[in-house]
Image (cartoon, rainbow, N blue to C red):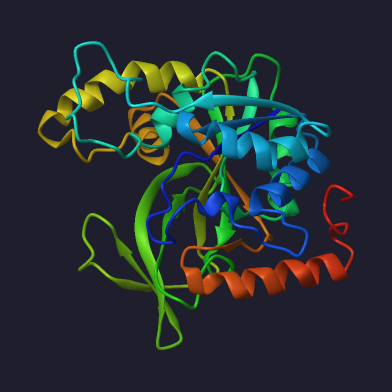
Length: 303
């Protein structure tokens, strides 16, 4: 099983390459903890999706640490990975979104994999839940995916709002819709506002399940992403400077059309991440506490 890490983002709110921000006294990054947890859960290969210009810095930092403990591959998310007949504005710099990022590793990834962000700490339980789900799929399973759902109370920061996908699902824990939302604490309560209509704010329960962009897939998802890529771009011809082809949006549309199903896999894990520079102190302290409790070895990789 593969671990696909989306690491081509620009980290605009944090500033710079937050994926390679040291997070402990040993110089490890959040990515190190994710790979450690994934390997422990049974994933045996990591695929980094990065910008080509960042290859050397990734290879010489995280790459050299993990290559000896897990098979490591790299794929490059580039702006020329676009459907035939589409021409992007010459001044576009930002990558085209998470769905385009996944397509960058289409020819590398194996039959079963999970996708995660590079700058989020997901916690071991989330990887364990994802691995157990993928192992439970019957051989040859297709169009049956999973999303790891976190209690929203375990995914927020005290330093501002965060973007989370609020999960709506049926009695069989099948995803019905995923509403990308701005979520923040206001006067001790958790408020969610859909990104496409931020005036439609509502208070949600701390137990509400949200997506942290951790999906469990079989490789056929690439066929759907490839099929729907050009129609998406053609629908955004007037927005090619800003549009993003996003995994949650594609999966939601596939569910709506009845092409796929997506199981909601709840986890007790607690998220840590550096959405804002002010978050770093708390993340460092939290991970140090986990090391002191013995949940992670000092130095992660024995260094």
